[in-house]
Image (cartoon, rainbow, N blue to C red; front, side, top):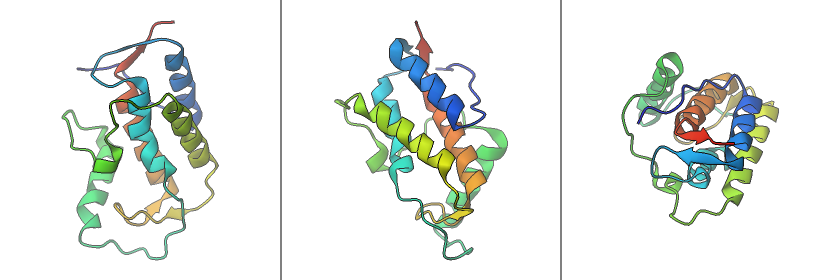
Length: 147
């Protein structure tokens, strides 16, 4: 699977693509649009709180290196395991698409300079935003608009 070549400039571009896809799409992979939205939307649904430290734990250091690599080089050309809570069930409701869009809007409106993230550690909002848009572009690239 290669997918469409996507590079979302901002959350509005991602939302516009998702809204276009929800009208009618062909999937290149096994997931539905709602399942991809569930997967991409889960991290966006987590509380956005200011970081209380600028120090990474030993567990966060490799995860931060992953983000830095993705932000510099794009999404890896291999299948990566998802966190269990991000694996969509087979029967995801279409409301997951609305939830993902709401999460993207929330991210666009976020005014916190450095976010606290339990997995990635303290993240400057621009680093988190770029990673999130690359992640979303990767997953939504496997859907082709048909309308």
